Length: 128
Ligand code: HEC
Image (cartoon, rainbow, N blue to C red; front, side, top):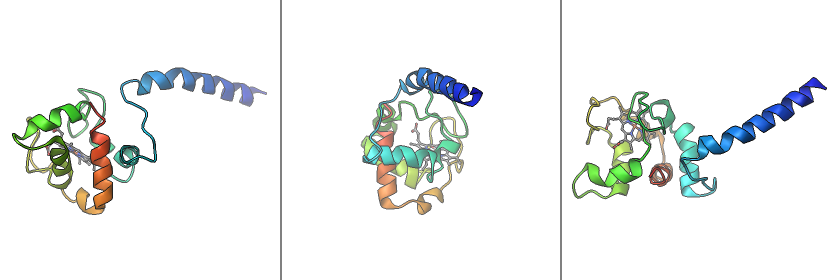
């Protein structure tokens, strides 16, 4: 039964690879706000088309690894949560150094509900 063997092998390989790949990030409860945000990040939010979660990897936008820690230092006097929300709703209000204006889709926010933006912010806050 070669098919069964192949499946067994793939299962073992997946098990061997998964912990290493997800080691940098906590496992999120898919029913939590942050968990829903993680789904949106790669899904309907389309954030992952431009943002990697691995430090130093630039797709179109900056990698978002560690953004939770950076967020409170970006705009003096602006709390991390507000900065992250603003980054989604009004991406050109503050530009990450080294990135040009209008590279992040300003119409993106219009396709997201207020709850979806809140879930994305909750997810971004887990990226310490
Ligand atoms: C078309 C590409 C593109 C898409 C799609 C996109 N972004 Fe961005 N994003 C950028 C670029 C470029 C920057 C840097 C320029 C700026 O600050 O606006 C950025 C900046 C950011 C920042 C600020 C990062 C920092 O270090 O301060 C956050 C947070 C962010 N994006 C979150 C998101 C989220 C969440 C989504 C999905 C809803 C998203 N982005 C979708 C391109 C994109």
